[in-house]
Length: 318
Image (tube, rainbow, N blue to C red; front, side):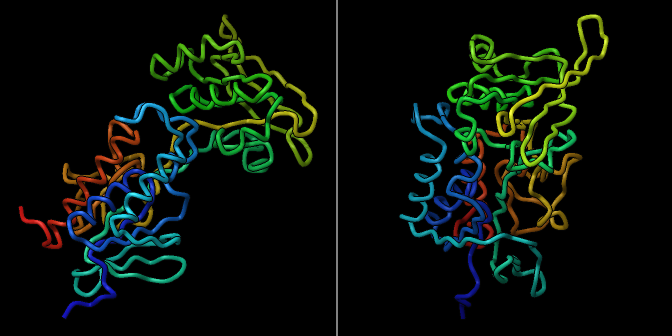
């Protein structure tokens, strides 16, 4: 007799990987439950403009995420808002127990697509002024700095995207780059370097931010052309400056760390079919070790993971 309280598959995460998995799982005949702790689309929802998703030339991240969510829901996927704490094997290894803050759920298979969260830069005052001058999302918080000066920490694709977005609203943008070059793709580099609103400070880092309730001083540490270290303290009116940190991601792999192999950066190591060492567990998207983390690759991961899960539970043949 089938236990209706046991899901065919539980999908953790509502980014492109998780929602793509939900779409493919329902089409394969599974009954997926998506556990989401964020808005539709996950981190993609915080992206101002997505212009590299095939077939869609110009769309906001929030709209793309909502379209994916609506598609999965239309096909029959169910959703629950909760935070996953851990995932374990139960009942002789035949079922998974997904432990959430709101309770426990059981499933024959799990697709873990919880993604990654922003990495902190580590400067003094970063934690203290989080949400009060220090931010990790330009599209989320950029409007609070309309007409103000902002700093963006980082030199990769996301940092350049953040700087270009902030250049639309801030009075000036300073991109603080530790290295002597930008690591972003050429189109982004060219856009940043040609923008009159963006100043790039190479071989520079933020040493700290200071103030009372809001940031009033930003301390920069640099190396000049002769290799001599310099220290510069910039003063602002309280609340007149913002610091946006964009220095990479931290994979949210803790709930599956006992069930899957992690690489030296904490990303889940998967096989080509998105499976891991524990049978029935599949990982997809930004949480796994992959050479490219984009919406399109995450969606592809989700499709593969769902198809693999369907085969695992016996819905699809080999």
